[in-house]
Length: 211
Image 1: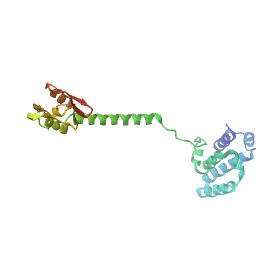
Image 2 (image 1 turned 90 degrees about the horizontal axis):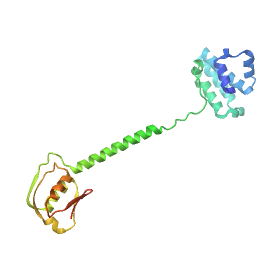
Image 3 (image 1 turned 45 degrees about the vertical axis):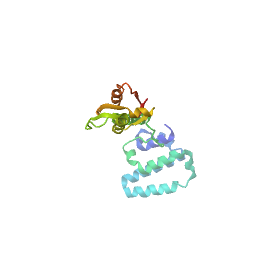
Image 4 (image 1 turned 180 degrees about the vertical axis):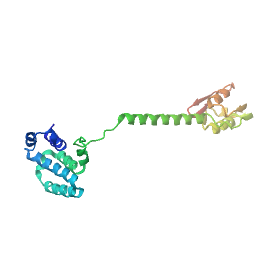
């Protein structure tokens, strides 16, 4: 232990040190000042809380202007705070770590949160795709009798939220007999329409292309 740890231990456990050892520790003037401050503070606390406050305030005002405290920097400030606000910890023998504790980030937990967020986003995307590929089961089938392909695909576009692109203008004018069942997937609708010899349809993302 360094001399600052020793003086704290001396205040907490004076019975562990012989008079000779105590005198040797307190031979350092700077250590002796800290020891006196802690001892007076502890004694004042036991006698009376009001007396304790007065003694500590007086000692603090006496020591605060002194430039000699520069030799232990932030450790001196921590020991002073210890003397003013942590006497209960001293009384019950709680070890006090002098220093500033910085909470480190937890990359593992952050990574888990990011993974959960990614899974939720993927689930939302999958749901959106499924909704575009099908329509509510309450939709009734529609029978087209000798209707232009343009009318049929217009109904498909409205039901599934897709667009239609014609490679030739003549294709839209072809007349068909077709029963549109909105409970089917869009890919199944395209397959059914491709059973007509004169038609060649394909899906490209959210677009039905008529070649």
